[in-house]
Structure formats: structure tokens, C-alpha cells
Amino acid sequence: MKFGKYIVLLLLLLFVGTSIYVATLDKKYKVERTKIIAAPIEVVFDQLIDFKKWPAWSPWIEQEPSATLTYGTKSIGEGASYRWDGEKIGAGNMETIGVHEPDSITQKITFTAPFESSSAVFWKLKSVEGGTEVTWSMQGEMNFMMKGFMAFSGGIDKQVGPDYERGLIKLDSVSTAALKVFTVDVNGVKMHGGGYYMYSSASTNMKQLGDKIQELISKVEAFIDQNSISQAGMPFTLYHKMDQDNNAIILSCAVPIVEGVTPPVSSGLLLGELKPFKAVKVTLKGDYTNLQAAWSAGYAYIADNQLDADLTKPVLEMYVNDPEDFPNPADWITELYVPIK
Image (tube, rainbow, N blue to C red):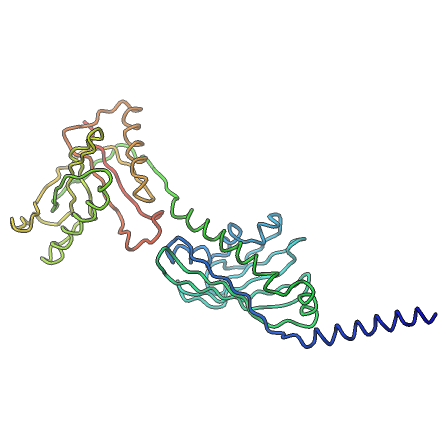
């Protein structure tokens, strides 16, 4: 009997000692991880601000894809929220309470199972060389039960930190994948309206093509701006010759203008006029690196529909929106016109 009493007393002392130890632990905590993601800040922000995009990179949903997700009346921006309920990841909800686009997001996370707690979550984004520096942090205060659990499981940083690291790795993959999305639509036979344009011509090769187009368009746009000439549309490129065997390209980069204004010889620019012409139109939405796929789709349409390309006219590549206004290349729009007889 005495031995049993000693065991009870020992367990009591152990319980009291453990309770005292847990009570003395700091109840405040902070978990933080940082990673540079190879995508523009706006693209990364877009993945974070919409809760419906979280399952694609969430380290917890990865652990339990079958968990039930319920979204609030808003899933994007301030006031957005969502709930989760799973056997492995427990239950809780997240709410966005502050947004400073595209630099920071403040959220509140509340766990209801397996234990109750709430924390503040912070996202800080900064444009850096190579992409976006993303800092993901969580901070709050632990109650006695939570302190006890964490004290004997290695601490909250050890428990949550690896999930944050995994989440940032997946966020990197999702963000970079978003840059590569593209679609090609063959719009069929259309009439191009033509019109006046100011242009500059050059010869180049495939490797230097993108830089040469940017250089020539910038030259024309600068002249138009400096001379207050009314622009009538978005810039385009006319391909006069493309010799793949000899890696030689002759092209003109142009900007449509309202009236036929002849530039001075010293400008190095010329005035041109496109007469209305019939063409197969193709629309690319995505990075310019996918232009070859769009051109191939256009010529395939011509062959499949037994049309005749008009080789006496240059093909036209129009840049419908300005990349400076659309950080994600997946949003760039280019219209291609292959003249037909």
C-alpha cells in the first residue's frame, strides 16, 4: 500500500512540476519564414489575395485534399474568408482584415479543432532582383493547454515552420506556372482596316528579334510623343522576310497614326499606309515566347481550309496591350494577321 501511495505522490509532484513549468513558459509566439519567388510582385499577390487559389499551394490542403472548404460571401480582398474542416488538419477559419496592394496582407486565423486558438497572420511582399521576397509570419498568445502541447512537441516554430517553408515552395511553383499560361485562338478570315502608320525598318536574327522590336517601337513612340502626333492604335510589326535557313529577318515596327504626317529624314522614320486587306486572324493571349505556336496555328488553318496566303504582302503582328500595364505575361494579347488572296 505504501508503494502505491508513493507512486500517487510522485505522479502528483510530476503533474504539479509540469504545470509550474508550463505556466512559466512565454505565452507569446511568432513563426516567420521568407523566400524569394521568381515572379513579379503582382503575380504573387494575386495568388495570396484570393482564398479560392489557396488550395493550389496550401501545405495543409496538400496533407488532406479531401478536407471540406467553405468560402464566405467574399473570397478576394479585405473581408474575404474561408473555413476548413478535416480529420487530419482539424477545423478553423481565416479572414482577411487588411490589404495594402501589392505589398502586404493582414489576416486572422482561428482554430476550433483539435484545440481553440487564434493568431494574426502577416504577408509582406517586396520586389527584389530575381522576383519577389515574400515573408509569411504568424504571431499570437498561447493558452495553458496550447503551451503544454507545444512544450512537449518541440515548440510552435518546429511544428508550424516546416509547413510555412513547404507552402512558400509551392507558392513559388504556382506563381511561376501562372506566367507560362497561354491560349491561341484562330479567329478565321477577317478584314484588316488598314490606315496610316509611322515606322522604322531593320534586319535582325531570331536571337535578337525581341530586343530589336522593342528598340524600334520605342524609337517610333518617342518621336510621336515628342511631336504630339495622334496615335490611332497599338504598335505592330510587319515581317517582310523571314529566312529561317539563314537566320535573317527583315521587319518594320510601326505605330498607327490618325493622319499621314511625313517625318523628317533626320528622324530615320518613314510614313506608311496599309490598304484594307483580307487575312486569317489569330489571337495569342500569353507571353511573346509563344508566338511561334500562334503563327503555326494560323498557317495550319490556311492549309486546312484550302486558302492561299498572299506572299506579296507582309504578315502583321499587333501588340494589343502594353506589357508595362500587365505584369503577368499570361495577360499579354497579340493579334496576328496572315494576308490571303
